[in-house]
Structures are given as structure tokens and as C-alpha cells.
Image 1 (cartoon, rainbow, N blue to C red):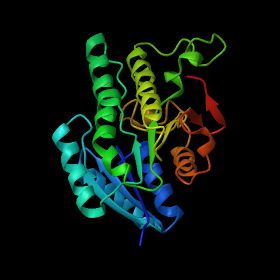
Image 2: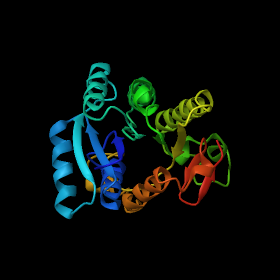
Image 3: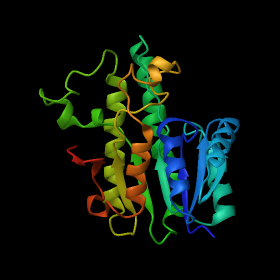
Length: 250
């Protein structure tokens, strides 16, 4: 029987999909719940992973991080089926470079900041029932104020109309940091994880955008990083902003 219940939001593609696959293939102790706005897409993604062969278990749940009713229903379902949650991976996110300033900020803040904050609050009672709970926020290196303000960093100038996404990830980092501080007296370990620039739908659905114009890496590396976190290999970095080679400054 699986002993570690993992919920991943936005698990039907990109980093979420890769993470679900890596974890499900790692060990029979894992039961990965793939959450997505579209249950149909979640089930299709689950079937693709299962066809490749896995050791653990997979299931799906409909969860739209911008819809409180959807979140509440997912909490109820997971509570009924498992009675706890061991790992929450807040991965669902959007990127917007819309020409209208308010439009791009509204979309990024609703999905990348308010959504994860509400999801974390809703699932926290189930996480705190776990003996080894992990709360993981998938962020981005461009959410680091220290890196973005460093003229020698590749993130220094950013991309045109990219400030909404960057600001949303900086805000997400603060939410995670506050959770880590507030619940420091509990067993809950909080991590902000930078997955690196990897293939995803974040920049758009076209193949050119998905591959980052030839610059994006393999999201499996991101999944392996998150697996190392939930296996306790990065516990010394709890409460910090981790990436594959170390810790980023806030």
C-alpha cells in the first residue's frame, strides 16, 4: 500500500506532468494525485504515464486553482479517500505577455499567487495530519529580487511585458516564506523550488513556444529535483529557495 500521498496541481503537462511521472516511477510507496482544471486532460496524462510503466499509483482530481468551489471539492475527495496529504506541490501557473498591463497582471496574480495561497490554506489541515508533510511551491529564478537586480545575472532585464509573471513569482515566494515561518513549530517543511527553464505550455501552446525557441531543457530534471525534496535529500534547505545546484537568494 502507498504510504506517501502526493498532490500536484497543473499535472497534465510541463513540470507537473514530468514530476508526476518521475515520482510514480520512483517507488511503490507513492500515490500521486494528478490535479488539473480539465479532468479529461488529467486522465489522458495519467494514461500516458501508466503506459510507460510505473511502480507507484496514480489517480486524478479536477482542481482549478482559481475556483474555490473546485478546491473545496478536491479537499473533500482527498480527505474521504486518504484522510491526509503528505506532499502538496503547488505547480499550476500561467505566463502572460498580453499587451494590456492589467490583463496580464490579473491573470498572473489570480493563478500564480492567489490560487496557490488558497490551495495551501485549504489543504493544510490534511498536510498537518501527515508525519512528514511537505509543502512545495514551484517558482522561478526570475522571482528572486536579488538575481533580477544583479546586472551580471541573465535575469537582469527580463523579457518585454514579462514583469507580471516575475512579480507573481516573487509574491509566491513570500507566501511560501510566510508559511514556513508561521508553521515552523510543526513538522511541515516548506520549499520554494526553481525548476529551471524547461519545456512547458507556459510561454504558449505552439511547439516553438513550448521548447523556448530551442533553449528549454528537459522537465524530467525538474521532476527529479522535486523528488529529491520529498525524499528528504534537501531537508537542510527547508524554508529556502532551492534549485538543482543549491539555494537562490530571495
